[in-house]
Amino acid sequence: MTETLPPGDPTQFRENEKKRPFRPSPVQVQWLMVVGFLSVGYALYLRYLAIEYSPVALACDGGLPTVLCKTRTMVTYLFKNNVFGLAALIVAVLHVIRPSIVTLTVGIAVAGLGIVLYNIGLSGVAIALMILGFARPAPATA
Image (tube, rainbow, N blue to C red):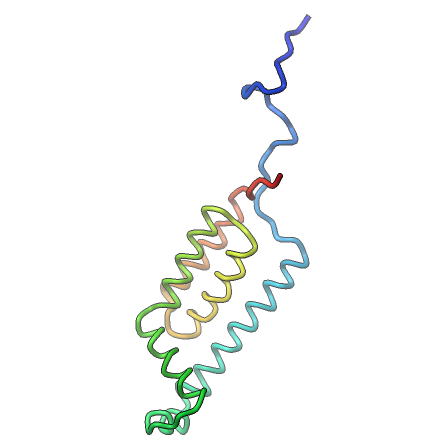
């Protein structure tokens, strides 16, 4: 006769407790695509129609008090100090440690901004880390 282990024994292997890798559902993938396109689109708008566009740059540097000029000033300060790249890298490390749709969404948004707004190096590393997050097991849910 074979010996059976008690139900709480940690040496007992249970098939249903295998950890599965993090995989977003199709609806979550669509949400990620929307967030990615919106963040890259807004970054392209800021870069080519606010930061690099000469008439807007001259008007803002001349002291025009509009929301676009204030946004231009803030974004210029942020990308000069690598804030987009650092934020993307921090969120990507959190995503590798504990993958979730929230960290992936924030990471894609910030990395998209960083790639377009001159923080290419750190944002590229962050995107690579977010891809590695798909190899990690998803957090257990009760």
